[in-house]
Amino acid sequence: MKNKELTQREREVLGIVIQSYVVSASPVGSRFIARNFNLGLSDATIRNVMADLEDAGYISQPHTSAGRVPTDKGYRYYVDLIMRVQRIDEVEKQRIDRNLRSCATERRDSSDVLLAAAKVLGRISRQLSVVISPRLSLGVFERLDMMMLSSSRIMVVLSIQSLFVKTIVMELDIEVSRGQIDQVVELLNQRLSGLTLDEIRSSIGRRLADCDADTAKGLLDAVVRSAGSLFDEAPVLERLYMSGTEYIVNQPEFDQPQKVRDLVCMLEDKQKMVGLLERDGLGAQDPLREGDIRITIGKENQASTVEDFTVVSTPYFVGDTMGKLAVLGPKRMDYERVVRVVNYMAGCLSTTLTEFN
View (cartoon, one colour):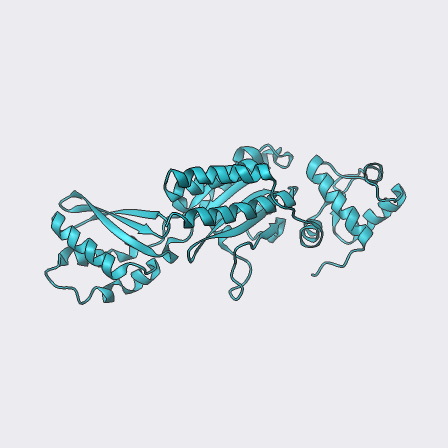
């Protein structure tokens, strides 16, 4: 159902209720608004406006007190039609730049950059932050290396766009020499470089079918047979970086044991967390672009464990691959601040990881 158009007076009062509730975590009454905000309205008029907002479902009365709190519908109207996002604070900007720049300067692994991004985003937002690396299956294969662990055991290291690395140990039913490994590595890099892992997995047999029979044939066949796992997606645990749990558990919304248990269950289910954030919600014909911010509030989140949360997410890009970063917190969050921090972090992350190439 579409939101009804509110009058200017109703918009002002709804915005004040939300902003005041974000700060105080306490129901907001008409007398408080009349005394603290210069609206030129009497206590009785504000009370009538709040009654209209409650009848329309934008605010509710949690107890018998006169105070009101925003509903999911009220928050949605606010983020869509009332809030105005300002430019990021210079101090916040410098903290993000400094943390990501140090990783890039030291030429550390991309996982270090993603973990640093999650930590600084959690500290600045004072909420739970989540960063998901791009899907490796859509990443461009750059090169492959093999290291001998024994004559029948090798470690394969895949380098994928922007220093994303995947390693896997292969157990062989044949013995191989260092010379045979070097032959196969050179051949695979010649034939497969520039393809996505999805493309390699589906076509590797055809791409290597005309290779000479004496070119370490046994090892080459083993690579083809193992392509399903070798060039497959990285496990969820290797793609997910989270930080900021200590901030969110101190929020008043989680002062009840059941709420804390629900939060712990949500954090432990890494598969659902990745699934929640990788749904772009914009439809197949409207893919996410840089700067797109998605805000899902309360029951708009499909997972029941996230019904008490707001999720603010946005994509970042490394070449043609896309990762996600997000802030999860109580619906009573500082939306303007979180949106500008998430948006700036995504841009910095895209730039930093792309510069690794």
